[in-house]
Amino acid sequence: MGSEDRRLDVLRAIVEDYVETREPVGSRMLVERHRLGVSPATIRNDMAALEEGGYIAQPHTSAGRVPTDKGYRMFVDRLSTVKALSTPEKRAIQDFLENAVDLDDVVDRSVRLLAQLTHQVAVVQYPSLRHSAMRHLELVPVGERRLLVVLITDTGRVEQRTLELAGPVTDLLVAEMRTRLNAVASGQRLAQLVGTLENLPDAFAPIDRPLVRSVIQVIEETLAEESEERIVLAGTANLARGGGMDFTHTLSPVLEALEEQVVLLRLLTEMAQDSVTVAVRIGHETQHEGLVETSFVTTGYGNDGDSVARIGSIGPTRMDYPGTIAAVRAVARYLSRILAA
Image 1 (cartoon, rainbow, N blue to C red):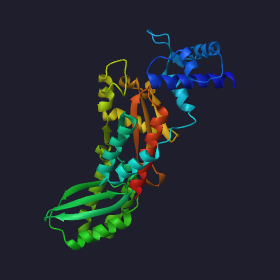
Image 2 (cartoon, rainbow, N blue to C red; image 1 turned 180 degrees about the vertical axis):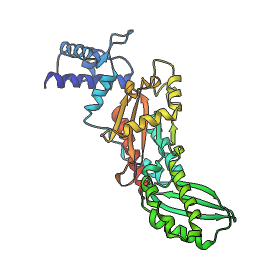
Image 3 (cartoon, helix red, strand yellow; image 1 turned 90 degrees about the vertical axis):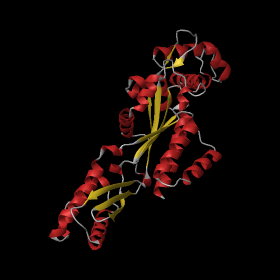
Image 4 (cartoon, rainbow, N blue to C red; image 1 turned 180 degrees about the horizontal axis):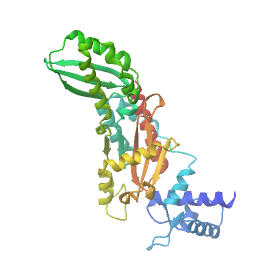
């Protein structure tokens, strides 16, 4: 084994011990707990090299060492195995999510489940309209002067808007609009829908075209609305529980950052660009002052392997990365399966 591989083993042992014990790790502890196959003096040399490289650091009050953000990054990048969830855990996830009644319930259950599995904060982004496809478009007359426009996506998302009418509309025209709109829109990605609907009014009688254009405008405005970007959090109480997380500073900056949806959305959007299946941002990589002692583990979910949004876990940099990655991946997989059903 080369010195670089051996140092990686030492770093891995330091990360695992610090995550488990929360105590800075000394060379004696490494010798006692791990079969590294080298002398205590060699381990001390390796620790000195790791410290010089910025992978571990010495807290002021202790003789031991703790991993730095750079050390955790090296550990995560070199992870060869991710903790497998037990069969009962997998079954519990499946049973819990399959009992959901609608999309809101699925999202709510997913985020609570992930928080329970990781004992950290869980975050789920609602399926974005931009990444969804149209399953069905429904038009429902409400009285004589209103028309309810309902968009149902392939991710189970339902958006409805009310259109005020200038005058009564016949059932025949409503039926024709419904049929033609669905013929053109069903199965289409919502991002491409605007161009697809552009010429649709030409298929109608001139007298009916203003109403058709109004319906299309309502659809376009719905797709353009920024309020679609919704995030659900669970497990913030885990931040304050002594058994879950420990921050050297006050919790306030972390809680304030988590309350800012724009901060979380930016991070989730950036992490969606990563080429890896499960993306990890550690400490300072979050580029937010309030989150310098936290790490984010996220992955995409969606049907047919096409990611429509992200789900993830937020905890201290001193988190169980293999376990968190496994839990995030498992919940995302079941969530995707349910959306595709």
